[in-house]
Length: 345
Image (cartoon, rainbow, N blue to C red; front, top):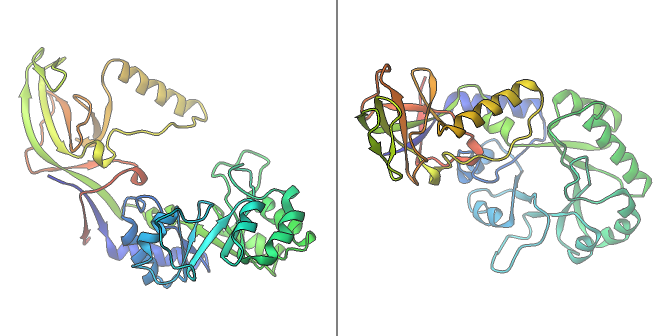
């Protein structure tokens, strides 16, 4: 009874090496659920890659990873460690996003976050005079910028980064290192040409861990298959089957992240039409599951349970049998596998 994530390790590591070659000085991001692969697993992979520093989301994640990664750990969420969390201060880079925090963290190793077009955390241009005084007591390891993924014209994140370097230098704050995210190799090359005295280092997780095509996949074990007649009641809500078919019970439920969705920003006609079609299916109690059979995602027969889901297959489809596996098209950053296995081509 498992939701399994399988990894073609040889190809996965080939992809990692290709990304590292493309982005010298890359900082692997090891946050959240470890991009579905597990935080400890990717921290170990980062160590194998020879990374001198990794980035995590919170201080609690840093506390967990410190035992498997012996380099520096950058905490992306601003703020000091809460009570009860013990961190190796000589290895942790704390993110500073306000002048007040810069004053309070005197002596600590820090990265100063700058306000980008994201408008989420960060020092503003108006803060620079006060920041200059506060930084006299900081062990500043560099500055950082977090850029949006979408690029509405005429916005260019590399231009925003270059402008920030100019502002900082004009304020008497030379930028030896600038950590950035969501930039391409060409954008980084443009920045290095514009500011050759600054070391631009890309932080990335998705591109590094999930960028390889078909290198990883989730599969769910089929636990049980039962025929159901039209009008027959089933499940916890005792709904009636709309037609003759099969109920297929598969591993993977809400505790794995199955059936949980985050709000989406819809751009363009096609995504809106797909969303509308999904809303119409939902209004008729036909919610698509992530589980694929006969080349298509199949609908939930009822809302997923904590550890398993029930699918409905129409009578004209040959059902799987117990012990088969179904591909699960899930969002890796919100899914937790029961096990991770290595596979060979």
